[in-house]
Length: 109
Length: 121
Image 1 (tube, rainbow over the protein chains, first blue to last red):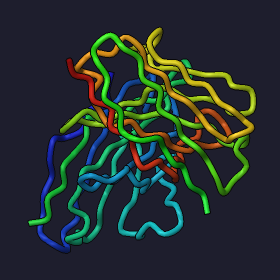
Image 2: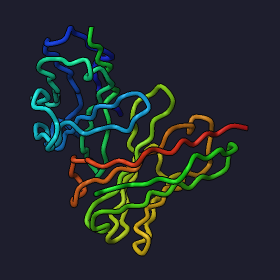
Image 3: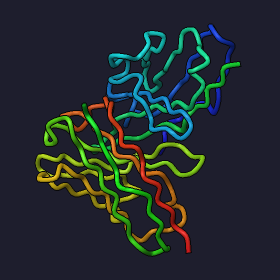
Image 4: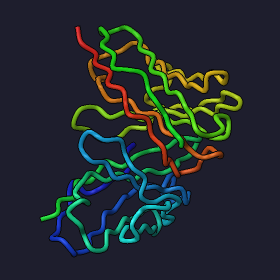
C-alpha cells in the first residue's frame, strides 16, 4: 500500500520544512532507492531527489533527502514562493515494484 | 534532447480497453526502463508497471495485474500501455516516465506530457 506522508505542511518564505515518508521493511526500510517528486498543478512530476539523497543537476541545493529506518525525509531549506506544490515520495519495493507516497501539499505562507 | 511524447486524450465506455502510446527520442531506447504512472483527478500518483525495452520483460503493480499490459516496438521506439475492463475509477491522467538502466533505479528524470483517459457511459 501507499507510503504515508503528511497531508500538508506550510511555512513562510525562508523557513525550512521537512516532509516525512513512512514505509515498511518491504520498501523504504530495505532499499536505498527512494526518490522525491515535485508536482505543480497541471504539470508532470519533476524529480528532486533520487537514491535517498542524490540531487540531479539543476535541482537547487535547498532540497535535500535522507532516510532513517523505514522513514525517508525531504527537507526544503529556505522556502521559496515557487516551492508551493505537491510533493511525492517513491520507493522501490520487494518483487520488482515501486510504490508512491500519499502526497503532501506544501503551502508558502 | 530526451523526449517522451504520449498519444492524445481518450474517451472510453465502461468495460472497454484503452491503449496509450509513449514515443521516445533523444537517447538509446533500449537502455532505460519505461514506467507508467497514473493520477486520478485530485488524487496522488500511482505506479502501474514498468517495461525493459531491450527484452520486453515487464513488472506490474498488484492492483493492475491482469488488466494492464505493457509492450514495446523497438523499431518505432514506442511503448504501449493497454488497460482493459475500464471502469469510471480508471479516469485519470496517465504518464510514462524514463527510468534507469536497472529495474530499481529511482531517477525518473524524463516524463511524458500525460494522457487523459476518461471513462464514462
